[in-house]
Image (spheres, one colour):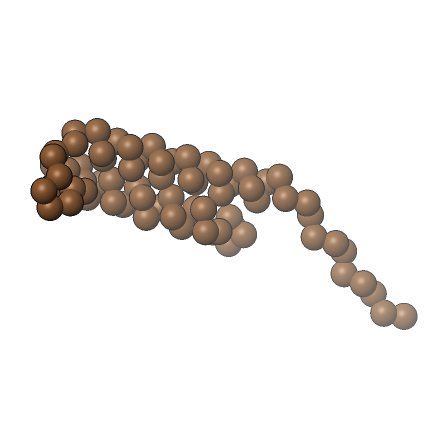
Length: 73
């Protein structure tokens, strides 16, 4: 199970957490000072987080299996 915990999945989890906090604060967390309010920012972070998690899972599933251990005689 830990082999699925690669950097893509960790970044995806962070982006989903940021989007949830953005939903909770009404998007105020996601704007820079002087920037206009964007209502879609939380959805963009959520979608990007989901895509990163999908990418992380697919990269593990499509990787070649490790070679078998060499036995000494």
